[in-house]
Image (tube, rainbow, N blue to C red; front, top):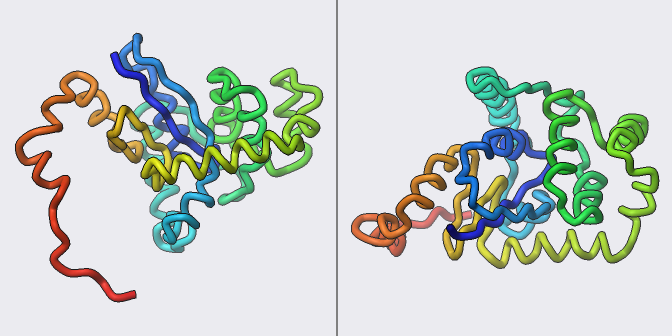
Length: 210
């Protein structure tokens, strides 16, 4: 079974919703959790996030609430969104991208509706995690650099959004590719031939002028 890198940002409800379904992944799949700054990816690829387009922002929140209810996933929006995700992202980096910590932070934000950019909520969250020196940990220059470099390396691999699975050279972006990931893991050769191979090199007929 191949290994997979999973790129995420705590800012993203889609990341939370996909993580909530990791029990569907093959048990022998080795997943490496890779925190990245979504805003950094947006800047690299020069495009907007869904929360930056007013009509899409509302649609996104409503869809996530519907999806969570349909799949039995606890879901509560934090008091404001987008929020600043730097503190929990740096904490994840400082703690070696520990899956249990990452799940706990996601649950606090998206199941309980807490705001990690609020000082009181942040102290409560890190206290429950048993991390007394969280602010000192995330202030370390090497932690900040690791998150920055991790985001740059994600972009270099072709990651443009989150959540994203990267398996070998294949990129699977978005919550809606979860089933695609499962099918790929079951039969990778199917995705390397026929129409799948043709559309991978499909030429551009017309480009929009910006």
